[in-house]
Image 1 (tube, helix red, strand yellow):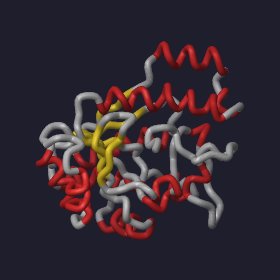
Image 2: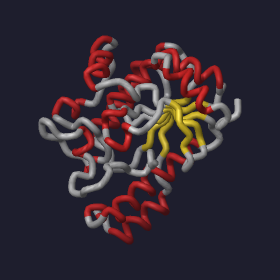
Image 3: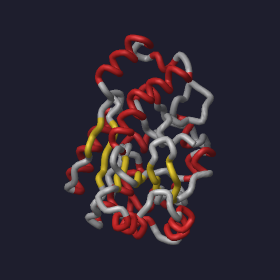
Image 4: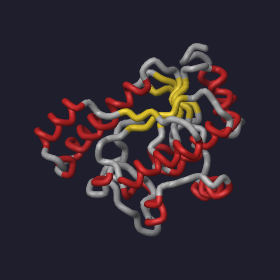
Length: 234
C-alpha cells in the first residue's frame, strides 16, 4: 500500500477500530514495516501489552538518551521479562554527545530553549531517525488530552519530518481510561508515576507536577514552550 495514498480512507477506517483491532490491522497492511517507539510511559506500556498479547509482528524500540531515570531503565528490563520480548534500544552518537557537552556544558540545556532543543536533537531526534529508517509506519502512544499541540493530531497522519505514516491508537483515550486498562491487565509501570511524575523524560528535565497542572508541565519546567522535544513536531 502506498504510504500517502488514500490517507482519508485510512483515517476513517482506523477511527472506528479500537486500539487492539487497529494494531492488528496496521501490521497486516504493512507487513514487517511497522515499528513502535516506547518511552516506557503509561500509554506506551499499554500499547506494548496490546502488541505482546496478540503476538503482532511489530518491532518495539526505545531511545536511551543517557540521562534517563534509573526507574525507567529498570522498567524496561521488567517489561521485557513480563512480555518475553526484546525492546531494541537506540543510543545517541558518541561524537555528537561529546561535542554537545563540550559546547554547552553538561547541563547547558537549562540556559536557553535553543540549547535544550539541540540536546533533544542529539539525544532523541537523530536516534529516532535511525530507528524509523526503512519502515513505513510509526506507532506512538500520544493522547490528545496531553497538550494543546497533541489535541490537533489525528489517529492516522503523515509525519513529514520522518517521511513515515504515524498511527496514534490511544489518541482519543482519557487518563482514567488508560489507568483502568493498566490495572485490569496488571501492566508494569514506572513507580515515579505514583510520585506525581506524569510525563517522564530525562531526569534533569522532568519534575513532578502539582494538582491541577497540565501533564506536560513537568517537562522542561524551567521554560515556557510547547513542551515538545522535536519527536512529534507539527
